Image (cartoon, rainbow, N blue to C red):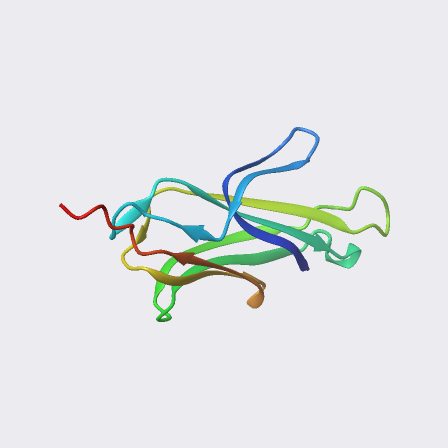
Length: 137
């Protein structure tokens, strides 16, 4: 299983035809205050499976860590690789995880780690900035 795309976005979905739609890809968060809970974000991962992997159930993990190595979030899923559309073809799998209220307590570097069957496949790094200071009063 290969991860071909891994991004953070404001919104994502798949159409009834199976097309992946991604809106507002980002790598920086500018909170109004800290600590702050981000109202909504999507972790979008597209994978390509080999024909020999069809029918296999694979553990899929999404972990969020801060720059100090502290785990903030862990999501465990099972993905069953579908049969390819034609014999010998690769299978594309899109996994969209909608998150609401993810807490960010401090500015700095953060990353989502994408693991398939226990093997790290991709890292999605992003930065949370210090809130902007208002004008002096």
